[in-house]
Length: 632
Image (cartoon, rainbow, N blue to C red; front, side, top):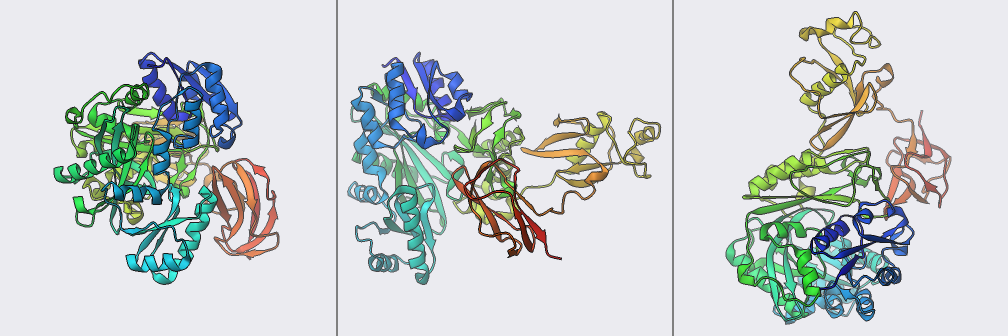
């Protein structure tokens, strides 16, 4: 066994690998960018090396800098984590050529599974069922159109080098095929430098089933059962679980055996995941599950597999990379209970799930479940990297118990002022369809209305009122005392009579009148900011609350026409100019942040009055970028 390991990654996965490495007595080395100088993974390592500026391409994606850090620190092995360089065959080869142990599959295996079309051909040869479709070399419009007609609409066009939903287009009608193809080709070229596509039959009720596989250098390959990752938003996983609901023994045997054959076909070593798509229109059946792709690395959702098997997959990775055989034979790998994982993102569900960045002034996560995170209170969520800040993992005897416990855990999340999707996760987990196991990849889109954020409950309003009152703030009573009278003044003493106790509370800019019963509602959980303002946490959501002030009367419901940056970023376009007549919802200025473009639109019909920035400018959160004057 090697004595030291460098993790070529950041955040929660770096912390996760360090945890196991330290337990095994290994020296740990972190790499970090200038933006991560104070990050948790840097402090948790025995040694850390600065490898460049904040942009990933100048730091975490710079293979030469990572290798130089390994050589400078004497690291004997490199673990790539997931993302960044984890599935880069050239990097794996460079690591091995430098005499450093690569904790991952052979470069040939990475290449074999790197392109979707080549991988599907290989799987067909190995007897692994694949989705009906076309993955040929002829990429002409004529051939692709003919193949789409042969397969039958709707079809799914996929960039062969794609991932994360990029270069993926669903086409419902033959007349829309050419436009969908052109769009997929453009995205494939811009995102992966490869415009080639494949075409698949579109599954109307798809479920995302994946199997954890593991191989070693002695020719052994095992599986560690399946995971269901069907709960997705825009092709990104949200909640994962193991095992898959509705998976019977015969179907499990068929899909896990196919996964092992897939891994054997590329002489796989280390941890990998074989991803399948299932047609769940009539339940999970062995003849309706097809190979989709292979991820040649550790997955974000690996903790649910660890929970049901009792296996530390990172320890297995380290041991297998050191030349040891897989620690367990297939027949003795257990599967016990039910595990679920929720991905906690720094994002604002109420604002189109835009990433939310900034300092974590208040950061409290459940302490009675497994939590994998790479941030802490006082840390920063940066605009430069993925906004996932933690994973909440539970393991219970039954699926029902796991869903209930994870929902409770999401409801216990307290984060401020950065916004999170904790409340959204809780609502997903408590939805009757999810509880019943009736899920597919279209669940979130189909149930959008039922997953919308809810206002602060009556219990919450009363609790806030009581919390504010106990802090001696201003109140308004039913018999019209001035809102400027303190509750504990001479007149305010009358508010002690329960029948006359009323208070106007402002929640996220909107006024709500309460009828407080003095001893019924405890003033918690409440985070005071000033004497009359604070944050109330309910169901994983942070509500900005305050006592009524005359200045709050409008509730902030009328916009001043200022278009403010929702996060720091760069102005990349200005579709409108000063003097233009615009309609409500029309794009005025476009901001690029966290690798995404965000169009700021006119809040009402009017005229563009001014711009405060120009294309190319870097702006801070809250900066006024343009002003629209309402039509008279």
